[in-house]
Length: 469
Image 1 (cartoon, helix red, strand yellow):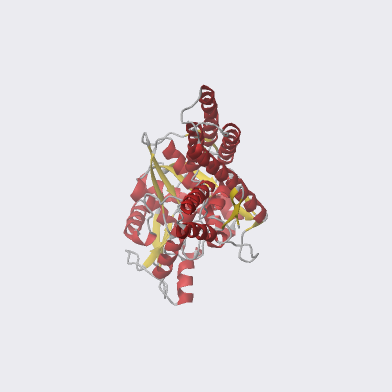
Image 2: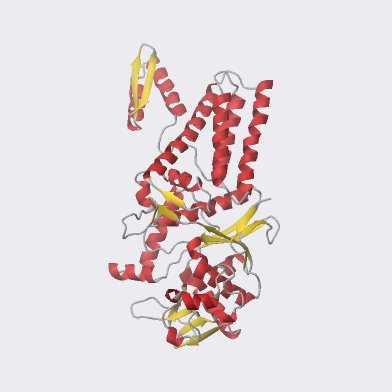
């Protein structure tokens, strides 16, 4: 049984889906006005892993994650460049998808765009007005926060305390509102901004209404899991609940999951501090599998500190797993015997405990840190028991088991862009055969190919030796 920490109840709960065998999951995606930064990458990696584990447990997952493609920041960037907001959003959606592929994040079942769902937003706002939960003033539509009796149930905030102590949270245009805490559902058009026709005049939607509408359209009025960064709990997710539940009269999401913040060298990431990194910048120094591995080395609800030292440590740790897989593949290819011995059968039976530990960790609120520890225990076990003289079946089984568990975490065990040791040995054998047959052109071709991949060969009396340049 999977247990999930629910932000709504502030405790771990057994996961029981709305519909047996199916999971409806919505995760707030990025606002696309620039390359995504490593803060954006954390929820992407976390919830991709949650999805993968749910699928591993046999659930059919309908995973929806949007792109916010109309927003003040997008409009500002478009005006600076003298292009349309659509051009900016299209460009950075494509760049975002490239980075997601590099981090081995599976495409969502649906990636809706806010600008293509405007009609649905107008419909929902109209319903909220008809039901008395919203009102229009001079082309702006506001949500009556106090009319929704359970407002604050996710963030555990009290409306009176908000009004008294947090003036900075109030939205501008207070003089038009019935209550300073009412929030915007629709805003009127400004010069130089994209806009759409509506019953309240030309304008565009407020940010919060977008996710409520896209979630309802692609997943239904009720969903199993809603995820995002903890910075979205208030006001974004709180407002989503108010809009969605006021509209449908039903519980919107059963489980709310939020990942903790990412700090850089123990400081909050910000452009002013000069510690702001995009995923693209990280990819210039590291394979993005290292970034994924680093993110999963901490529990998603724990604050995570990013530093060069920790990334180097993650790189080395990932390489230990990759090397173990590489060695096991080589052992399987060159094994003298095929069938398992009786002793090896016992070894395989014992190896099953590591998969049990892995599942136990993931069942406990997706504890990826402990799941990775179980993978390392299996790697150590494999290194100890798959020796020279082991059967092909033993090496193959241990290799596939490590790859299988890493695959659930979305971690690729092949060294990206590098030849594996086993591949190098195969090419060297082919070169030796070519030389025996006096096919020196082919032998030189293999040497040059290896050299391009950074592999230097040395012909000695003891045979061919190689090293990575």
